[in-house]
Image 1: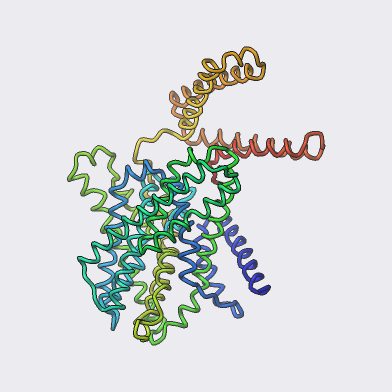
Image 2: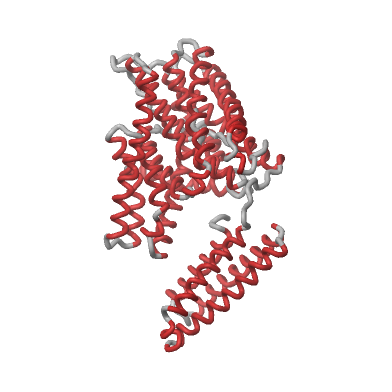
Length: 535
């Protein structure tokens, strides 16, 4: 037990060092961790790791999906529902079908059911990989929304294809009509279960006397509850988690009404999701020796060749699908033409951001070892190896080149967007106006009778004047990005100096540590307004 614990702690510590190194050399950490894990697996004496697919699905998948749904804007998701659906459902089925027939043609002994099994495994792009690669790169909001929305839903559609193909292999029978009906039933009932469970959790958070710690713990439990409840009834656990996460996110302002609750949840989830994401990607690299050992009668060269062919197919298919999906609806519908055209640059980024990841590997590993009659499952080891090659090629090759592609084509914002500084100032102006209205209408007696409340009114009035002047300057001179960046640099420099001053105050021991911590928290919140949580 002590040895296992030490091994886990050592792996986590090494993982953190690798993430820091990846940030230093400016490589998205999922790519770097997969490569590092792969390199480590060849070092003599490194313990061989066994990835339990049930563990990955149950422990990692629900919170990763829930967190992605939580930070997805429902309004943006619904606005771009057409391209999201075309990618998450249409492209998944198209990819599965082409991979199925191609694999039958190039791999000896492959049946059509096995082909659809492989197609369902490699069809969904990975959400975490794309988001991490694009972090810090200026990409149009529409493209980010579409990629995030696709990644929320495509896991469900690909897993449903996988389950039907698996049933066909195990039973030898397959009905397209029955499978189509079952697909809509499984997906829709998964949404129903997710919304029902989310309503229950909404009531618990909203009306029971919870604390910030309990609220944070309940949010960690929620995705597991939704996933297990849906899977218990043989519905889509992925759709349950996604729909429940979108509902809870949309109603979060009613559920979590105190700042301490939200900040506590933010700290818990940022840490948990970071550790899960990083751990999963390094485990992908470390799992290669076990995959190679199980390759059996196929040579490594054969597996690599098949994996390269399948990788090329899914990359090309994404281009072939994305361009018609982006432009054909504009030719057919005047309503769609009201939105600015994505041109050719937007579809290039959407097409090139199709990196595969942990869901594909976990799905491949979940293929049973034996058929129902005790015979070994056909081609299982080869399917797993091909999946690993596809993940490695798409993640490393596309992931490393995506930022270069974005810079080369000089991608700019497609839709008209209000600058972030102007949005923040406008929001704060509305909030201050509400405060001033309440102080004037509802708390007029307190303003005149309480000096502190009177000073607060004066402060709000002065802040409104300052915000109006700032908004007028932003609108009139149309500040360039360089000017805004310089302004942010000055603010961050001031906050850094103020933080050093607080450290000096702590050494002087004149003010209490509690009050100094509160001042530090306010500085952190001010810095968050500038950085948006980035680095």
